[in-house]
Length: 217
Ligand SMILES: Nc1ncnc2c1ncn2[C@@H]1O[C@H](COP(=O)(O)OP(=O)(O)O)[C@@H](O)[C@H]1O
Ligand SMILES: [Mg+2]
Image (tube, rainbow, N blue to C red; front, side, top):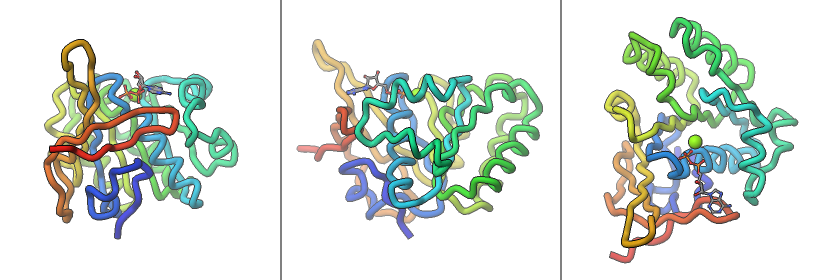
């Protein structure tokens, strides 16, 4: 089964969408478009009645996120109000036992029953957690049992080997200095059960959201 990503131009590169269910890592530097990618993914599902769960670790108030996302044509605040997409801020749990984070996420997943889940970004959880690897393993196990398709975003500036290792798919968002400008690219680094190339494709962000353009090489 394939789940359409909602990112224009991406599905044809990965046999029609993300393997479903699966755990997908979306990584890139700050400003690469990870949060836009995540919300576009959830919004696309919500249009078709699929429930979504957006988990942030950044202590970002709902209104703050809305302010930055509402310029995008795909963004519909009403989906949150109708609880088609649930916004969950777990930042206050960051310094607690890892088991309490798993428990909270397990509860919110059972309550909202999402088809699409996003954790954006995962890195802050590592900072206070002595047993991060174990936590990640438990988290992935819990999410796999649930059977949703999960996007986990990560900042490339940190060490993210554990995240790469446990992911069924890896999408890399790239920002590259070329002369005076920085250009955006995307690469599918890994996608289990999928015949994909490792080509680097240009990527654009406009009011319509993120689109993958065809590589011309
Ligand atoms: N309406 C827009 N049109 C074009 N680019 C935009 C628009 N809104 C935001 N951006 C770009 O997206 C970036 C933020 O993307 P975001 O998903 O928040 O990054 P990340 O989560 O990877 O740090 C901004 O720095 C800006 O370059
Ligand atoms: Mg972000």
